[in-house]
Length: 460
Image 1 (tube, rainbow, N blue to C red):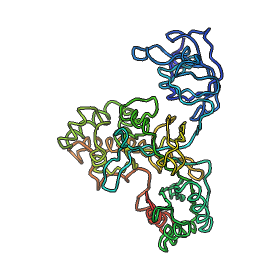
Image 2 (cartoon, helix red, strand yellow; image 1 turned 45 degrees about the vertical axis):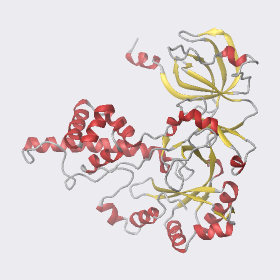
Image 3 (cartoon, rainbow, N blue to C red; image 1 turned 30 degrees about the vertical axis):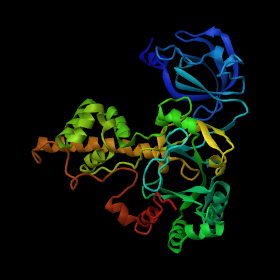
Image 4 (tube, helix red, strand yellow; image 1 turned 60 degrees about the horizontal axis):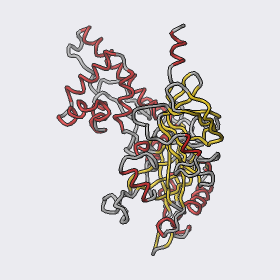
């Protein structure tokens, strides 16, 4: 058998799967799996709509997990008749057969399910910068931001934008403004902001007052200039939902039955940098580490020794790259899982009534990314641009390493290492900042970027 054939037969990870159950078959037993398979249709994520049959792999840590016998038993808490939703973790496919290491009941057939919407979950912060907590159980108050991407309005003129924002504020009290223009080197430049309908004297602002506040004279001039330059603003309704107290308590304890909080953390620069560094060939990987440890301060060195690039602070990695003329894409601690499956509970309480309920359960079906990396209708390649910025950084590191080696060999620069920032090539990342590009696009790219920056990560 060829080496390529062996590669194809190895288990391929597919991440998390949410399955709408159609049938349980206890007559089938797969190798190294518990008895039975569950048949259904994948809901949300990259596998949305695909018919699959999945089994639960045996592991030392999942002996107490719910199994088919629990799902089909009407007296069991995990009872999940056909039409219910089950959430599978660490799923993989091998020779066409799907397996997973963990499964939880997500929702009953009549639950209020939402599929495929970008969601961010993070702690709620009060005016003093402190994390808020529920009085009932002391759990962290988590806030979910839900982008209703299927209700996006694409606008190319100020009148359209104003009408779209008005509709979004009336619909969900907030919206995302994804402001994008064509970049000088092709593709799109993007800035993303959030807009909320405010409160006055204990009641929501009138739409007239909200729009007057949002579209100040200066901001209106900026957005009209964006439209003059061919820019587009996608208006995505944004909903703010509190996480249910019991679900928040579960998240605090690290349980994943309701919400796996880690799924909504981007991992910052460290996780992304670790990803590209792990793809580097041996010499480059060793060289990066040696250079970093030679320059890093004591806390950064200790962080690297503790867990590699993943545990090094964003600031330390950005400084290391900046000294080599590299600009990494922006990131944040918490981000949006681009595709999710979520369940609402409509508890009859004053706290939940404001936005229509609590978020009870949610499964991330994709990695968490910052606002600017969430795809919109006018910027469908946002994810590729985000990850591509880190890939370009690795390519730039490889080039500068070869340049420094060449200089050392030719004795033009006897010392080893990367060239200084002044002699390094153009910084790479999401934006082109070369002098040629700025001069060549004096009427376009440069002015567009300045205008875009006026919308950058604003919250009104």
